Length: 127
Ligand SMILES: [Zn+2]
Ligand SMILES: [Zn+2]
Image (cartoon, rainbow, N blue to C red; front, side, top):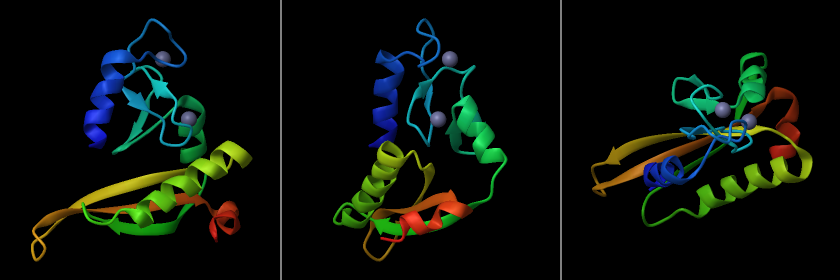
């Protein structure tokens, strides 16, 4: 579902910093969409120039985790909301790492979501 969302962005959106360049990624912290020149990748993570710098020069810690499948996504939604609220209201940066695993007993794909924040911001995420 997330990858189809990305292909939607690829078709219709343009880089936040270059209106004539096609966006190929989204910053994991501020969610601005970025062209190849503005997108800085670290493994599966992509950041805008400012947040690539923030990512590289700070210590990040895992503050929240959730496992979801097609039947339950409540926990993950709470984490997405927390991330969004803290960014929009207080400019506190965080990013999500999602890993997919096959649950052979239930015969479905689970996603394991981990939210990372700056070591100094951990208190804000304890809700
Ligand atoms: Zn950013
Ligand atoms: Zn750009």
